[in-house]
Image (cartoon, rainbow, N blue to C red):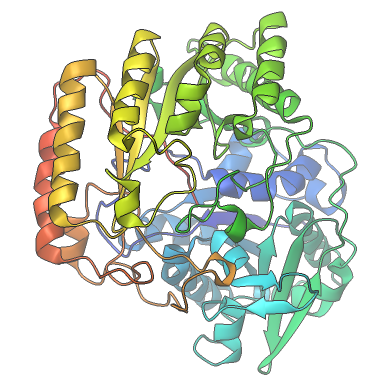
Length: 532
């Protein structure tokens, strides 16, 4: 049978407009990465995937990949896609706050299609709740593991047929092959469940699990992560539909050095820290891979948007791991053959100040925007930050030095602010005032992404919180309204040892943030930040 597939990024919230001001990408970036291997097979017209609904153009393929923000606003679009495609395979990507949305989308798909669809959950939440014990082959299920929740009866056992943890692009391809080669078309769900053991040879650091009559079944990927050939860039497979005003509203690709999901730092609250991911970035060949993705983005924009210029945002936690050697290698490649792309990336405060010459060199090859994680006004107040490596000078003084340098170099700057780390309300309001003063002085930061700290599962490094994440993070419209200027936020899942947010304080902050957002800056607008 001809395989039919729909892939979605699950909604964060049940209703409201929260996140629209900062999570402004229209492309489900992490979902693209998870599906690259399968999409490449479809583009080559190879095997089962070559006969699937993904075997057309990248524009056609993109139509069956949905980025959902709120359930209320986007459920009709989701159900219309299910009705039109009638997929055998539904891929759902979810962060922890998206788990209720993923569950609801799975429930609706099951109601519409029964066991004719195999429902597979992956993404950050699965990867942080299903993992190998350190130094052991034993698989651990956090309290929030969807598999554990199904086995305990807290979720219906058929909510998800398979839950995938880790980096498993080749596994998506194999699951589609199990369905496409099954003798009986009537039950894609049964084909995936019964054939899951046949995926064990798929390379990569992954775990796939399912539940049958309360019993958890697990398959662990082979230790090798090698691939037959490098995967095409996401933009080549799915196109580019995002625009950011920091790049003059030009089509903006999300590009990667494909060096791994981890950061070189290990801040306790961060999903990309080494403890949560389990590994450091692998930088061998990273500069070449990143350069290749930028060059591809330029080609795709020329083909699909011929009257526009190409832009890109580099999704590395920090640009090429902050490695001077990798950055110098990238600059050498880009000088020899300019990719023709204006791009932005992420650095830490101390990296900017320590690598000014390298940033100037990056400007020569297209760098125009840097996003910096400011997080708080005083790291010591919240117990410290791993990335605060030069504490001899005050944190805000260093941030101001970053703004002064970037402004003098002609580089736009955005900052990320994270409340809920243990600071008091007055320090939050003072920080917003400082941001407003900086805008007056430096015309920067041009973008500010506000978030409220959420305790993610972090592969068990969660201070014993053991949240199950079954409830929507913002329980009612009062909270949704108060947090509207924020990106990620929760009233239910604070960091260990931290208080739940107070509605009155969040409402006060919303007023201060809206005053900041009314600052008369030509470059003010949507912040570039990580998608699910």
